[in-house]
Length: 169
Image (tube, rainbow, N blue to C red; front, side):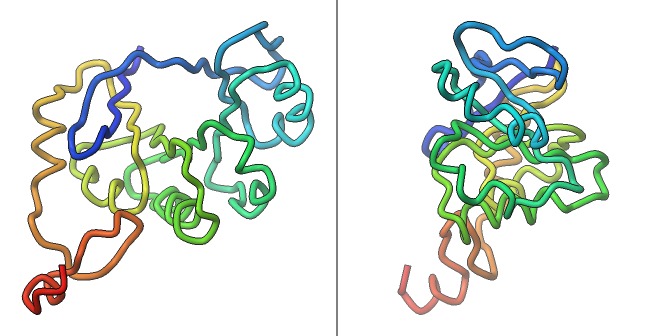
């Protein structure tokens, strides 16, 4: 069972996952949080939300963030999937969610989530990370603080190095 690390302020903490992944053909529970595929949400989203469930949507790399644009206010989380470490489309999805659509809910990295990519995931807007059950919180926290300076603006709103030097930060 994977672990769930969440950003709380500038700290990374291990939390119990309040959501369960629900297969497209599985019956919805009576209460709690669920994560469904985009196609399941498009078919059953209104009923799931009307049942009082906290709903999250898993975005595969072939899914379009734009297809969720009008429903984001109803969603508790969006979980872009990293199918393999060298596929970066989930970064784009997270960035679009935060910067273009102003999504304030949880953006959870799922799939092939690697410690080496932690800082970039955070910069793009991820604030929760579903990691291997062997993951070490201290190591992931260290990865969170690996780079002091950034060189361009991003979803995390950190001041770029040139702005820090100019005293604009």
